[in-house]
Image (cartoon, rainbow, N blue to C red):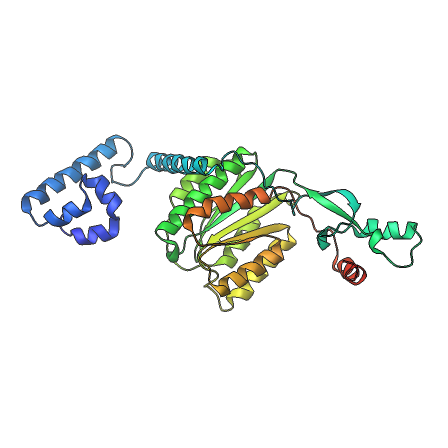
Length: 349
């Protein structure tokens, strides 16, 4: 830093320089060529590093210790919780919207506006037969509501590619902190995937909040984006198929790796959907092409799409998606019965 300050500034950034030296970067810029100031700067840096070693935040070789990462994770958590409290999001437990993932219950007469997927085929056919009808009438239709049943396994997949550096990765980390904190507090399980062109970190859903917080803090950005790999590895981490499994993908771009990027991603999405894993995409400033792919992913896997324009709202969106995903989804209709439903009911709805 003393001998080549311009390179050190690019490498370390203003915050780290400020902490190491006790000076504002602008002040150093003005005085770095003065020999007396160079000597003083060198002594300050050496003293600060010695102090960090004594406090256990650096080891003898100057590398950051686990204790330092732990304190940094706590600091990030404290900052995020203060922001969430200010937004009024900490006390919220569920979405006001009707769940589309919960178990079927309360079979009743069909109402205008009910979703096609919630029609009860067997009950409708039985009712029509009991009434002696030769064809199914609108009055025979039965539907059901889905009730959110609570526990879910959720994985937060965070894009750590080079395009996510700076403020994007910062808000993405804090959103992950918020999601893990709220999910585990609600007795749900939270996991993590950190991905670029490869998987940098993976944790199956559990209730280990501080391990997730520490892993989020350690994320560094580089490389391309491989969404298909992130989805594939996430599905492997969901071990309880009889529970609700949900993947949240946060990225500023969509697939950039592979010969046929879109096809490769959708193949993995179909595998996830077949294993009852829903996927939501939180895209930061997605372009039109990216948003179209994101919608296909959500449609196939019964998830949601959020195109984020304001970075300050990322944590709010992540939590809203979590509240909305409470419950479990099992699609018990075969393709044959769905086809029958379409032909029989389409003209009635």
